[in-house]
Length: 311
Image 1 (tube, rainbow, N blue to C red):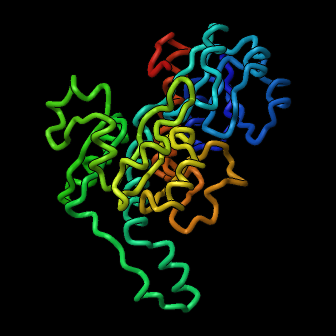
Image 2 (spheres, helix red, strand yellow):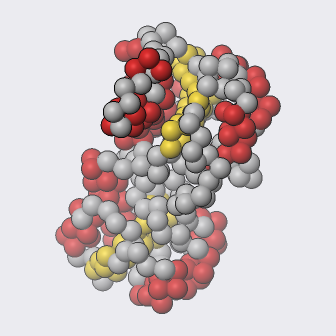
């Protein structure tokens, strides 16, 4: 009988699905790398979210591991190439939390435009800063979306009612442009120079280099805003901090960081930026969807050799 380890907190629907399929499942969260190494030889499958780092050391110790499932889209916390070298399948759940992430990006856009966190904080303190809080409307603005996968597509649909012009930079858009007549396919340079809001929904580069640098900020509108709910290393945090301090752009909202958990960061306490702790995909609804998806996929693989959403 196959045996699976769930090493991160997630909806208990995953455990129920494994049990229904007569697969033994253990839920052991918050384990250190050393603790996982000691027990991982007992398992055929492993399920993680973003907290567990599936390192080379863990993979080397996992003598019976056949599949690693990520309840979510990003697999930055898994050494995918080393897993493949050791004949392990790595799968994710693309689209499972796309709506949650897109809605959070939209919430960040509205929050930064209307200065909601500052308004909330000062009002709680009885300061009544009404005269000093003048926001901007989303209506009639140009939104630039970098990356047009499940999240980018969903965000483009969320803003349809705001009379927003949507520019998209995506290498794959040209082949499916007819499916998205409401967006315009542009180059990266055109997107950053024409957009009022730039929202990143793409993968990091293979080299891990930021997609946006100090020179890019100089080409943007001084009234532009940066939104990043994708990957922490897409936006260089020092360059962004400098751009804000030098008034090259108006503001930013960031959900992901170069190092997480972010206990220290150069962006902390910059009044022009809104920060959230990597919660874009964290909704009750999305947690159920991704847990259900990954459990079913692993069951299909362990019991029937069916490979789905292989990374």
